[in-house]
Image (cartoon, rainbow, N blue to C red):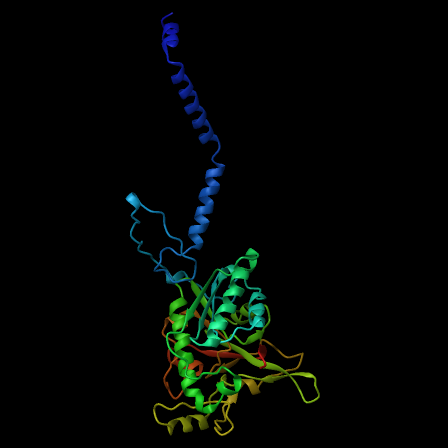
Length: 375
């Protein structure tokens, strides 16, 4: 009877509240799946986002939630174990990140289409661009941004891990980007010095602690095998460059191919003698008839037959930069693109000399082709 009186005296509201609390506890206890999904989604976002605004832009930055009284916690101290970073002949299996860098003065849709066609997982590719402060550069930047917006809002498998666009903080030395103007001998030293500065700015701003490979790809490379990255990395070389050719219609009106980039070469005694006679600030250029260096040019060593061995490989002393794959540790060791005469070389050829001085080797694929836009 005492127990019955105690129940009768209990407030009905108390009983209702107790029942609701019990029901809520049971729901929380036996339905953790939605919470787990939320945690999993948050973890995925954290894993793929930059840790804080000082992180290299190899992944999109996401702000952390506000802390106590709206104040954000201080940025964390981040540790990167560089010894765990790999650069192997099977980068897909080892989930190695590739940074594709492009100095871009003009935008060609065929360049972008070729980039999208790469079969390397786009989730492992970060892109970096630098454009000049010119009218052409403004147009190129606008076209690039439109292409990026379409791609990054499209199918997820086509999206790239991150994209960075820089604008040059210096004026270009020549006003026109026409091919005839770019390749005039009298413009080469100033043009290649500016190109070196642009490449270095782009490299130092975008390379991150998780970057395994850096692929330099010129904006006028409009055709390459979709397996370009896998084909180059399978050789597992510190610096490697394919042959850059150009498609054109010959005198008979038929499609044909011809060499384009003459900056990949093996040195000669004649070139060494010519360089020894030059003033310290002068450079020895390749590809001009009045400068007979007698170097062995990879462009002239190609086998263009259908049965050619595309895996044939040769050592090089100079490299071109139209499509140049570099292990990121080579750049981290200090190999950059000298904007000054370095052993009478500049830009990509100077980079090859610097890499070799640091103990790295340079290699070329004379029978493996990428194709340059024909103006």
